[in-house]
Image (cartoon, rainbow, N blue to C red; front, top):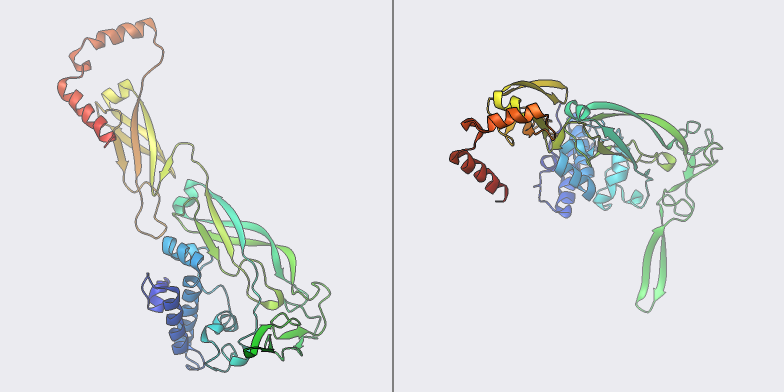
Length: 382
C-alpha cells in the first residue's frame, strides 16, 4: 500500500511553518491517542502515521529531502517504509514533550507531567556512500553493505544491566530526570531545572553494570544491511533508513543510516536529468547514403535509422530509453547527437576522388542550405 503524503497526513500546506506543523501533529496525536481509542487498530495506525509524518516534517534536513525526492529520500523506499520499527513507547518518548505535560494520558506514560523531564537516548546517524551504475539506476537495485557500528549488547540486550539486576529509580531526581534548584536573588526566589547529574536525565540508574558493555548497553560490531535503492536516483541524492544507524545507550532510539548516492560514469552515455545523451559519430558516406546503425542503451543496444543526407548536429530521440523519475513521473529519452567524422589524413587516390566529388553540384552548398546552417548557428547564441 502506497504511503500518503506527509503534508496530507497532518492536514497542512507544503508552505506550513514549523509551528503550524507542530500544532497539527499535536491535534492528530490527541485525536488518535490509544488511550482515547482503546482497542481501535485503525486509530493506532493513524497515530503512528502522524508520528512518522511529524518525524520527517519537523526536521529541516529530512523535510528538504522529502520535498525534493518524496518518500524515497527519507527512507520510504530504502527501508521498506514504516516508522523505523519503533514501538509506541519510542514514539511517546521521542515526541511526548510536544504536549508540554498538560495532557496526562495514562497507559504508556509518554505524556504525563512527571516524566516530561526524562531524557531518551538516541544513537548517532551513520553515513555511507553507495556507487551505482546507470543500469542500477534505471531499474533500482538491492545492495548489501557491511557497516561498523554500535549495536545493542547481546549479553544484556541493550539495557546495560547485568543479569536480572535491572534498574532502579534515581534517588537524586526521584525518577523525573531533572533537578530543581531554588536560589535567592535580589529579585526574589528563582527556580531552575537542570539535567540530573546522577542518571544523566534518564530517571533511573543501573543496579549492577553489565561486564560486557560496561553498563552502556551497546558494543562495537559489524552488521550487514540490505538497502533497496529505488529506480531514478541521482548523484548527490541522500536516502535514509530509519533506525539503522548506531544503537543508543540503555535501549534508546537507534540513529538513522544515511545513504549518499554516487553515480559511476558510463563509458558512452551522458546523463542529463532523466535523459541520456549519446554522441553518434558517422562517416561521411554513412551520413550521405543513410542506413541503420546500433547505439548503446542502459540495458543493451538499439537500432537507429539514419536518413540519407543526415546533417551533423541533428538529434534523434528514442522515446522512453532514458531513466525513470524517482517519483514515478515518467521516463526520460535517449538523445542521439549526430556528428560527422572527417578523416585527418588521405591517400592520393582518396584525394583525387574527393576532388572529383567537389565539382559535383550536390557537394556544393546552395543558398538555401547556407541560410539553414546560419539559422542554426544563430540559435546557438540566443
